[in-house]
Length: 253
Image 1: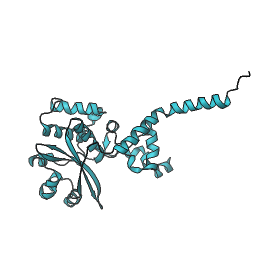
Image 2 (image 1 turned 180 degrees about the vertical axis):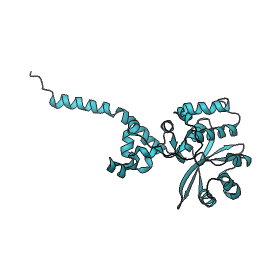
Image 3 (image 1 turned 90 degrees about the vertical axis):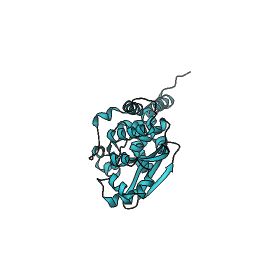
Image 4 (image 1 turned 45 degrees about the horizontal axis):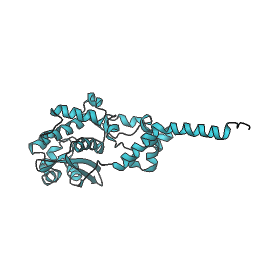
């Protein structure tokens, strides 16, 4: 097992016990699928019909922040063992869960995973959204999103948890405005070093999306999950076929 963990660190289930000083409500783990999570957001809003887009988008962001702690979530052997084995061999980017219902089975989620949950709810409600990606060579990458309402784009970062009051006091601007106004951007991330904030967030790249991000990985994970639950049927049929074809004595005529 030690060698397996060394070659495939994602086999080490202990990696999934990390936690940070996040806004996190463990009671929300009961929201273990998109339907329940959306119903929870609707209950906070007071209706499943939306008339105040800003209020609902803010509720989805807050619910996501409190639903997850920061950390990547991978498939367990008991949930999707084929993806668990194949992903590190095929493409390491396929390892992290991107299927929304499956992500909600776990308490941890990284920036892309948390954003995908929020985007799923908002897109299902008919919101116009877009992906905001970041990549700084010495820092790494980050994943956020923006929502269009009241005539403009508004920035959301559920994973890094910026100061909501600072953003709301400035009418929750988009990332372009925040980068152009570094005083506001730095104030929005008081827990982070200011040079880190400026270096990472000025590297933003906006991408318009028509479908939920990560669709290729999602197709891989949905397929392997199906096979993980059904492969024993095919193996059983194959066994009985071989048994009958090659080992069952033929009756003499």
